[in-house]
Length: 79
Image (cartoon, rainbow, N blue to C red; front, top):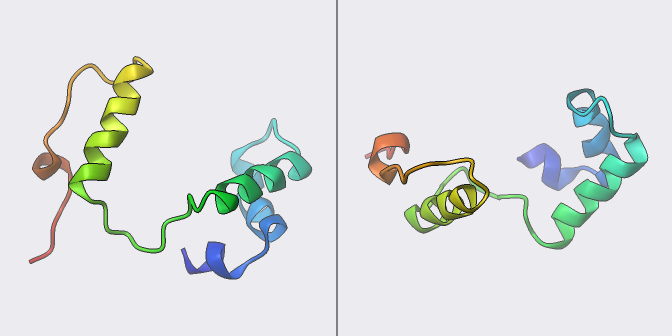
């Protein structure tokens, strides 16, 4: 996360380019910029239950998830 926040859009895009073989560096740089412009890059690894359930609603709407999973069943919370 530090790398994403401390690096330019092109540096981030270059670092992840191999994971997107059908995408140009220019296009991926634009994607990174759009993510940054809507503040989509997290600053912490904390994942709230609200965010967890919201993500599942999106996945269900896209027919990628059949049923809701309990937050406690997948997210480890350090005491």
